[in-house]
Image 1 (spheres, rainbow, N blue to C red):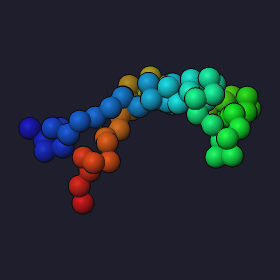
Image 2: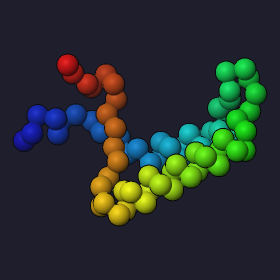
Image 3: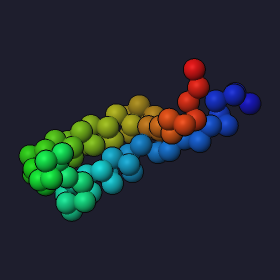
Image 4: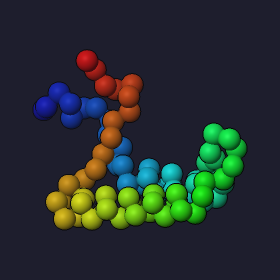
Length: 72
């Protein structure tokens, strides 16, 4: 078994979806306490579409590892 395969990996796209939902609902705010603008949310949604397209086209799952599991 490859040594890095034992590390926990998390699917990235659901995290981006949650980020967008939190931005829409007001759970996630700007540093000044104001809500995230609709234009900014549209940019996030476009980025998500591009990431999904890449993942599907390349048949490549986007995953991340928690920083605590990184070495080096």
